Length: 150
Image 1 (tube, rainbow, N blue to C red):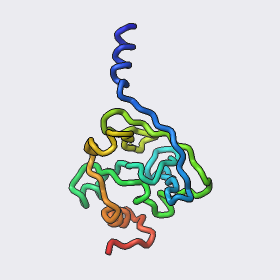
Image 2 (image 1 turned 45 degrees about the vertical axis):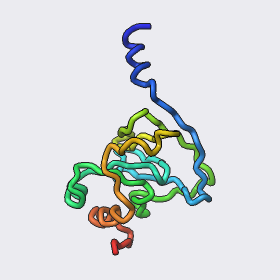
Image 3 (image 1 turned 120 degrees about the vertical axis):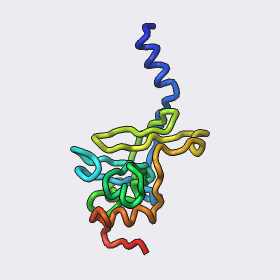
Image 4 (image 1 turned 90 degrees about the horizontal axis):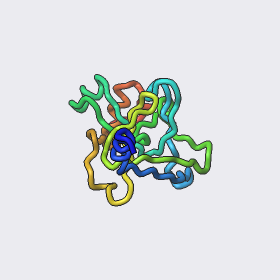
């Protein structure tokens, strides 16, 4: 084995790939995050609990952070992100890198998954917004869809 192969093997030693099904009828419908709001060129279909990284002046103004994480389900507004109920079952793949990090997919930063015992032990790579915190952010971005903070 050459040095490059050994380095790659060591880098991905903790990689864990999970495959599962998301059932729309269970209230866990996947979310279609649309381009160009989140991704650069194409829409992405993610689970409702997938953490999406958000940045920009609005995020800095509201949360005093350069970048925050929010669940895709909390970002639904019927235009830039919407629940996809076209299918009864959607297959999905999740990547557990062994440590919390962001994975870039077409310009949209998504948090890596955590499987098994690691699920609740490691901190998130960025601050995690709660549902009620996403509402004023969507309003500031002009994507509130009639939702109100209070």
